[in-house]
Image (cartoon, rainbow, N blue to C red; front, side):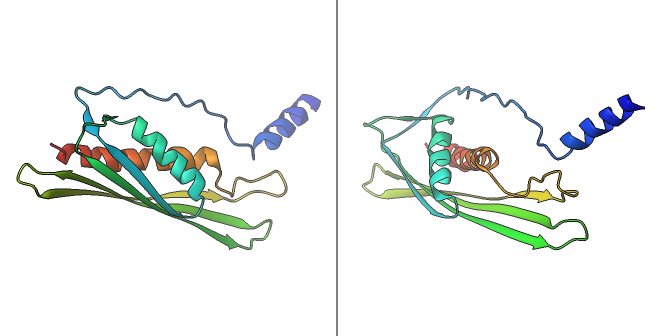
Length: 168
């Protein structure tokens, strides 16, 4: 009987804990690279420092290479917003957290005829985190760096990859 109680206590104790997962960064394998002369980042909204750091990291994981002789100049704009919705419940509050990003990547390069070509790529995404904790075991109702950073990185990469297809 004591064994079952101890087992039940362990299961109950760890029910509110987040599962620890190891994520391996996959290297980008590119058949060819597109070069760029400069890349600037404009970040506004919630968690902007983390968002900017993640956006810059995303550029290093794409098929772009920096080259001072390149013609392409890129501007990455990221607007982020965090929403927190709380509903009072019988046992404890239910928390629904969302983190949204609107990403616009603009690429400009001069043409041979003296003009300027502008390419645009957009990416919108929302990260949902719902928590309905039971009693005082614990909850996971707040977004943290470990969830937001890879989310932003992945979506900035997607926007950059969409632009990549159109760059000559």
